[in-house]
Amino acid sequence: MEQLLLLLCALLLGYGLGNLSFNARILEKPLEYLVMAVIVVMGNNSTATLLQSQNFFSTVPTFCLAVFIFNLLGLWLVFKFVAQPHRGTTERVAPSGLDTKVIFSSIKYLAALLLGLASSFVMHLDSEQCALLVDIMIFVMLFIVGLQLRRQGIGLRQIFLNRLGVLIAVSAMLLTLAAGITAATILNIDPWHGFLVVSGYGWYTLSGLMVTDVLGPELGTTAFLVDFFRELFAIVLIPLLRQLGPGLAVGYSGATALDFCLPVIKLHHGEDAVPIAITSGFLLTLLAPLTILLLR
Image (cartoon, rainbow, N blue to C red; front, side, top):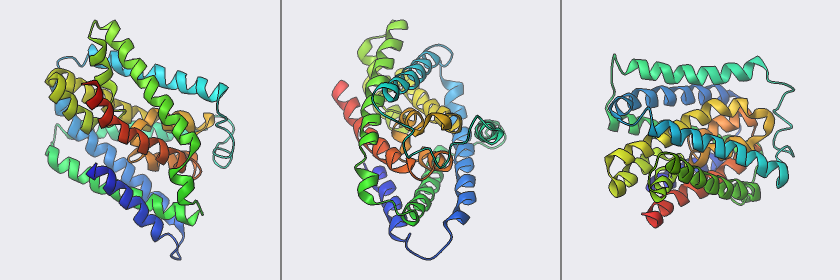
């Protein structure tokens, strides 16, 4: 909860200072560099967990694939028959066709992850130092996003009371839990354990600790890795999902649509997608610990 409050403070602080006279466009490059830096640090910090995980090549891929399929296919169906994702939110940013810039962005994020993984064999950073460094960089990124939102004239009510954001959050929660029970059934695991493994909705630092406390280190590590890869896959997918509107990108980002994925969504889907992401990410961030506590 403290982390959530700090993130909101960073966003609101930037929003409050956004009426100062400056060119908001000059912040685009620093924002992108910070995203790349966070991915490198996360890659460096995750190597030890990946190497120590005994179920990495069986349980983790099954859960990751289920979350991937259920969320993308399910959210696509939601927007096809319930919502209209192309109204307003993508007109400013979506080009016709999948251009090389979009593909390059996804490759760039993937390369940053590989660089982080490789760097850990040369110099492995302390986990606590990594967490602190990532938190600081995300704080700065949300501050910048807040500045840009104010410059674009987007109101606080539009940011925190967004109907489409609520729809995405509820859909992503139900689809993720359905993915958890499906993966558990395939792996012959207790369905309730499957629910718990995926109920961090991408918030891997929370799910790893809470699921370990409830189910032990094996499934706790699984929960950590499933949510960790959900966040990384989201970063790579966000540019590629540009043509389909922000709904799929925001939904698949889960709770991280409020923090790390938010600047990436803003960069590739435009300012109008930010309120949707904040509302959805905020709700899923609140729901993650509640879901784990209720299902334990």
